[in-house]
Image (cartoon, rainbow, N blue to C red; front, top):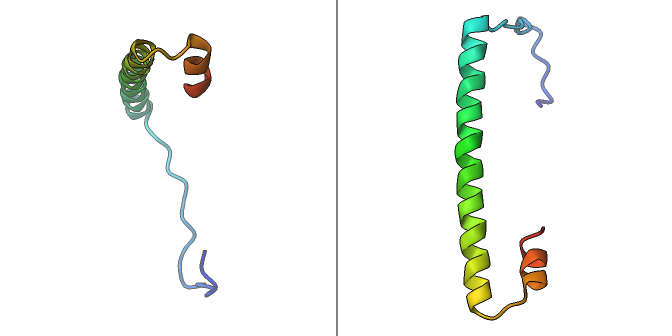
Length: 67
């Protein structure tokens, strides 16, 4: 936000997304979310396995992972 008022600029007009483009965006976002979920599950499972091998109790691991 600027302190200087700019009366000479036209207000931005809202742009409507074409339905085809919106659908492509939704599909891409869903694919990205699925990939992120898979990576998060793998990382948390590896971390839990590592900690179990180190002799840490499952309750402690769950607390550390925020479960």
